[in-house]
Image (cartoon, rainbow, N blue to C red; front, side, top):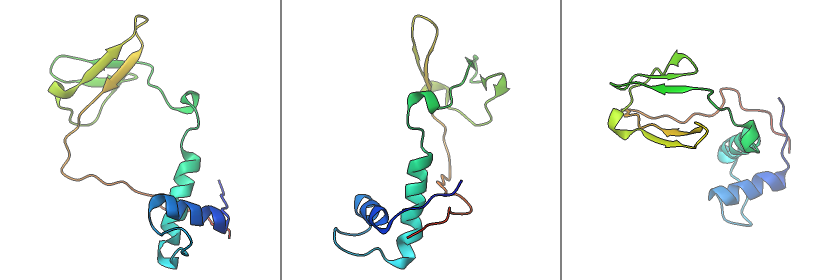
Length: 115
């Protein structure tokens, strides 16, 4: 999918992100990061209906977890599992996963920007 952004959109996003102050120009070295943020915003689901939802989550004694019949592949701290259930059996599961390294990445190939 191809995205295009105006200079004004990029400028506004840079101000919102705290990269620059209002009225300043976006440095060329930071422009791609601001555009990546705009792309991520457009890819983010707009409504709850667009968010993927697991059909079934099974939590077994000892911390084994399966999501839609597949084993959940990460280490989960069994004492840090929060479950909120509604009368119909639907609900929300919150898991705590310890990690030695956490990375938040951008797309490997940033979408093209048009200015």
